Length: 474
Ligand code: AMP
Ligand code: MG
Image (tube, rainbow, N blue to C red):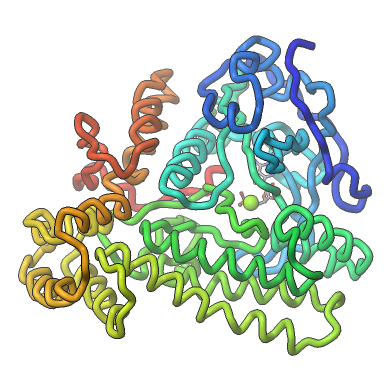
């Protein structure tokens, strides 16, 4: 076999309680949509080999590379607050793990790879829309500096997937520092399998908190990573949309790009997902929902913890950890370097005005201090009043205006993956034209640069372009 991947499969070395060993189901006519060559290089993989017929067959699940140990992982989870005792990889197969040249371990998973024992009513497949969305948004998040699963490749399958309409099938190759979820721990806790819970804890510690001590060390690590992650989401106006416990990793990487969206105009209670009727996962509720999920993790770990109070104490730190990360994020977004009392109020005042003024979240921060920023507000006076206070505060900083502008531009992106652009790229791809997808992906690799000829991608949607609702797209 000409395709060589140096697998080292630590998850597969756990026992059958953790997964079902099985191969992906072959597809009709695989063809490559995109290969992420820089990521392949980071992983120590041969990008050229992955574009050969054997490489593409491997990315489609038609050929299982030597050394792979394909399996579907089991997990459980709370979905919109309701308990599902058994979810698991219903449309994904973990091929195995590789250790990159710089010593980091990564899962390589095919998503859309056919039915598994965890598929329930689903077909185990994905269509090209969600695959391209995940490719675009996860790579955009990475370019913004947000911890995330990555997209190594997208292939079309040549098969038709039936949703409301017949749609072209596709498979995403997802790379993650692991696929262990809060829901993985919940599964073994609900099974009252303390031995498996302990084995999973050791496995997760080895991968994500090698220097931490025991189960409380893991819990603290997850809490710290999630506090930082959610603060970053907030800082880029990212709405995950489906923060179920099975969609929260212990690695601290963003996972599962279903109905997610970046805010255009700012509103703290913005919801996009068509299935989120109650606004459970609205932009501004994400910190509380993370806390809720972490409480489920702590509860699941209790059989391994001697004193409930210590777990509670860990959990109770989340709000302050999040608040500190949030202030740090937004302080940088308004160009402040020296923490000062009152910064939080200054930030919140701007956000309140942005909501009132229906200001575009990304473009306002990018343009702070200029006419472009005030023009984002339905009533520019809303901005002007804040600008005066802001400048008084800036006067107490030690930076020059030139340096500050540079910092602001390194912190506040010009480009985010706007939902209407993603939809346009998907629509074109379904019609066989991948150029908009490629152009958008390329632009999003440098979100902090001035977009130049890609400036149209920085524009909020026109009335005709607005995408009011997003879908899980399963
Ligand atoms: P998600 O909403 O993407 O987090 O998925 C929740 C659960 O539904 C997971 O266990 C998925 O594997 C499963 N699932 C979603 N879509 C499909 C599908 N098309 N076929 C089988 N299982 C699916
Ligand atoms: Mg999921």
